[in-house]
Amino acid sequence: MTEVTDVLPRLEIKNLQRAYGGRAVVDDVSLKIMPGQVTCLLGPSGCGKSTTLRMIAGVEMQDSGTIHVDGKLICDTVFRVPPERREIGLMFQDFALFPHLSVADNVGFGLKTGTKAERRARIEELLERVDLLRFIDGYPHQLSGGEQQRVAFCRALANAPRLLLADEPTGNLDPTTSDQVFAALMTLVRGTGLSAVIATHNLELAARMDRQIRLEAGQLVAL
Image 1 (spheres, rainbow, N blue to C red):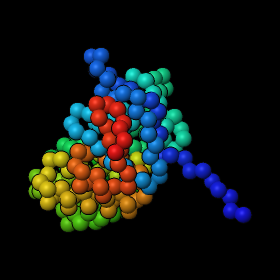
Image 2: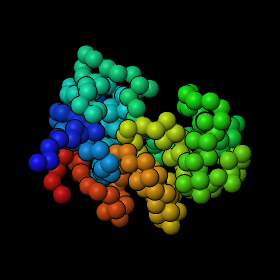
Image 3: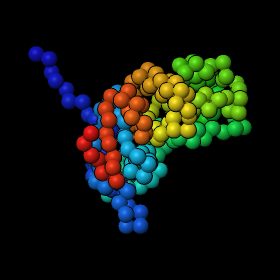
């Protein structure tokens, strides 16, 4: 008889809350993301999507609730694993590339382990997956907006995080470029098998993910 092994959620948040000036922005949110699952956090601007991602990443603290990754507590209101040790990649709508650094140096900015040759190989691998290897020694100003966003994807994944968080990753792009860039992101995510939470208000993009979770006024609601 084959033994059945329970799979731990890649991410589990329980009763997460955050308020500003007495107004609840994230109100008692609980959810689980399984390994390899690409989940859409869907909702209009101001519904709490960005704040939720920032708390998971550790760049903002929750008022209450807990965050676990692979069954291990990474944050409550007393204990907190620093953002750089959470093995979580985070990217925002703003590409935030360093203009004075080459494409290769932007992608490899956070890479601290391995030899120089190993780091270069990792950078080349990621850029090749999004069809940008030919720009490896170029600079951000030489790229289109869609190409810059693909470089930002590669940078977020360079350290092989267990979880990727993306906040409106195609929001600044025109519809055609947005579709192309989102396809590139999904290629990267599927190719590495990591879990991802992608926040968007775009229903067409949401439909292409494994699961959709809707936030309204800081609370999860049924789709």
